[in-house]
View 1 (spheres, helix red, strand yellow):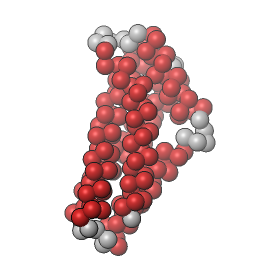
View 2 (tube, helix red, strand yellow; view 1 turned 135 degrees about the vertical axis):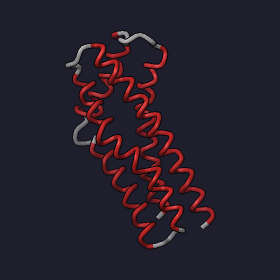
View 3 (cartoon, helix red, strand yellow; view 1 turned 120 degrees about the horizontal axis):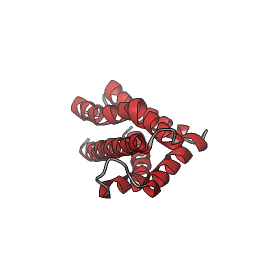
View 4 (cartoon, one colour; view 1 turned 30 degrees about the vertical axis):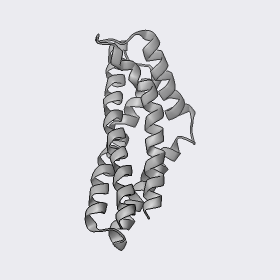
Length: 152
């Protein structure tokens, strides 16, 4: 079961890495509004991956479901000690919920470029911060599952 969780988490980590390659552009700008070339770069990326990529963009949601289902199955069948599954759930659930509740809607909105530049800048910075949290949490999930696979 660890292989399923690791596969799903690894996929999510790769997606987050690609997102962060665009998100990091916000780091070097301190003003309220990001430069137009930065907003254009980030927003066009999010338009492509959230809207234009349909139906392929659904694979991210599938990766999330597979990861959570794998962790749930680990807990139910007792393949791992309860602590490993509980720890994995604590690492997986918050970033997945955050992605569905805030990151994806913000990315769709940013990709539409309908807001004023200051609002687009706020969205881009929020997405960046959220992605850093999600990447860290999913990376720790990969470590946790790898260690669990070795010690069990």
